[in-house]
Image (cartoon, rainbow, N blue to C red; front, side, top):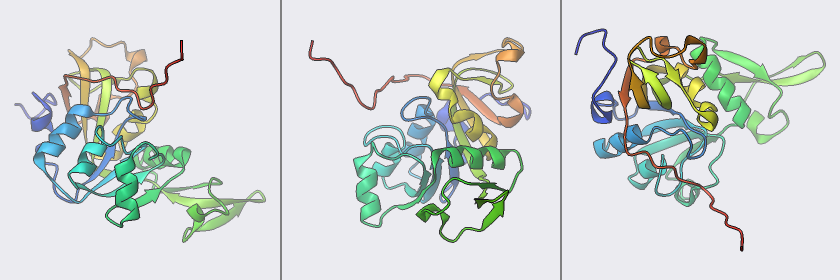
Length: 234
């Protein structure tokens, strides 16, 4: 593989140097747009003491829930974890460190980190437990919390389509967190449903420019899981 080639054959090769104790930003919204192949590769690698920054913690048997089953995650920084009973058990028994972050604040912390902004002020969380041990300042007669931007050792994202330079296009709900996550990692690993030659994508349709992506591969075997399946009586 040439030095300038970002394309990897599979998830195992793309994730080969993720190490024990690494911090990971992981894309997805619920079970939509999660980097399934990269998560499976991490599970096989058995690396431990991971700090994961993600909107969610998956479910008991899918997404980041797979890494919780094997005890590979030490800390979660998340905004929504309500679908994972194992997460609750690990947290309540002290086996998992958790930092809860309001969803909009989490998105902005990732975006800020990726943009090189170390910190910012937000009114979200003022007067709540979220504000504990954080600086509070007043602007225009309103109080704001100081929140820190987030950067991680690696970022794992999943896109609908990408080219060999790393330009990415997401579909619908998968666009919620993946674009911010993609900018926050020192090394961003993207898996795509379809990998096309550079120049094939409409420039106006690209959501993540390839400058943010260091590695890309075409994934396979994607599952369209649903967190809650509700059927009518009829």
